[in-house]
Image (cartoon, rainbow, N blue to C red; front, side, top):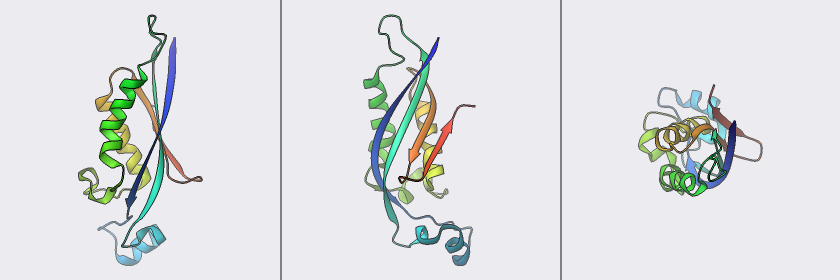
Length: 135
């Protein structure tokens, strides 16, 4: 039987939503106040969901300490208290929360193998969240 386990993390980061492919007016129309040249920040809430068989010996889908270590290395150490625009992975990509979510999902799928990473959800504000999940 397949089971799912989700864990929540928090990190803070700043970004500016700006595309070099757009004019000043187009950037302002697309991103509004989020196009502020000085950027702005968020206290993000990250949820990672993994799935797999429940191990008969441990009774768990995965060892949560292993998941914590992977999230710490791949996400928190990389993004917490940074300007996302300066991250190599966002050099040519606007660091919208959609793209942040995609990047975290990619990193987790490549790095965590104790269970299948089935979804990543990033909450940007109390009203806005984005999710990437398996099809």
